[in-house]
Image 1: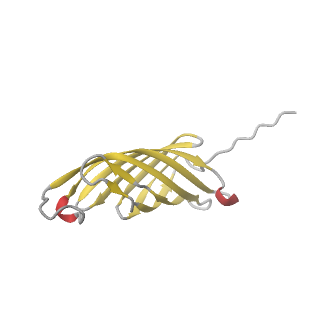
Image 2 (image 1 turned 90 degrees about the vertical axis):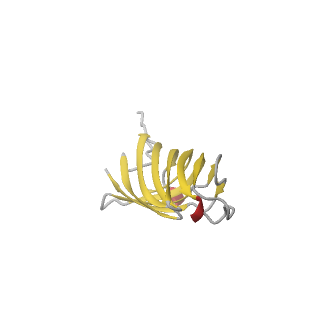
Image 3 (image 1 turned 90 degrees about the horizontal axis):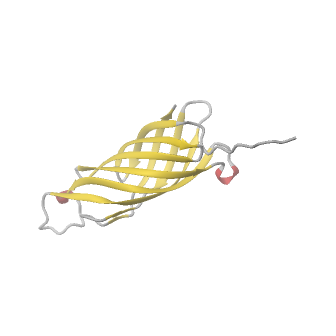
Length: 147
């Protein structure tokens, strides 16, 4: 007798919703394998915007809790911000600043069984190669509709 066990790190294929934190915006996550997803985040901050694309590896049953999963990943970002609104720029800087860099992410998410919702909490530090160099304050709470 042979038995096969499939471990799935997610309970949905695609999820879309909102993200709140230092930056606010929208998020779309789509699984390309049982344990790997692509996530796009369009965030607004400092009178500008930033688009981040991430590849994430997912792991199921965090802390031995069913439907509670954790993930880790990396990707890149591109965007612009208003230098006048960003407090760490020199006072003489004016106009916009280009953001172009690399991102990491680590987080945890819960997938509700009764309703098609997913809630996640993550930390997404960014190292920008232009403009504003390191953003370590990107903690976000996302609420997504799953389908």
